[in-house]
Image (cartoon, rainbow, N blue to C red; front, side):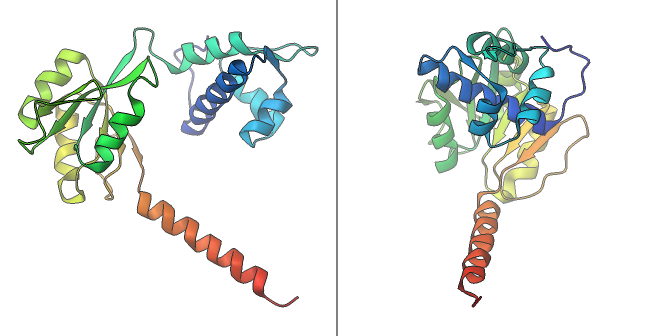
Length: 218
């Protein structure tokens, strides 16, 4: 298993997560071994990249049979998951928040959304897909009681900075931000932004450029 002092990059961790998902699919299809070039083809990366990434979890295959799928899956899980499991909080029980709770329900045993929060009294004190929804006033108490360090932010943009600050004050050290606004956070807090509008506009921009390029006379 990889050492705790190793320096990790977000891109490497993301690829390891992808490899784990792809390997789980292969195991479900009764495949017991896989070569680096086969996994690379599934992940749309180079075989050399796969080998470098797999080395970060201190696992190596054999020239004759490649990687043993179950063993590599176990090593990836030991690297990516907290042994006793990890609870996640979600702020904002709107359409995106409810969809995320539904999506993650039972999907990853070691990483689960266990507490949701909202300022709307009509949304609290309910259970959605096994996740209890709490009032914002209970944020610190619940986060401390459940040992939560990771949160998902799905509140409206105007409320995002204050909500993020409240999470940090409660002890959160990692935030996945779905609110379409940049956040100012302390350096010790890991932040990933996911702006769906920005992502779709970017895809549409390049799709349009590709279509125009095809229409130009040769």
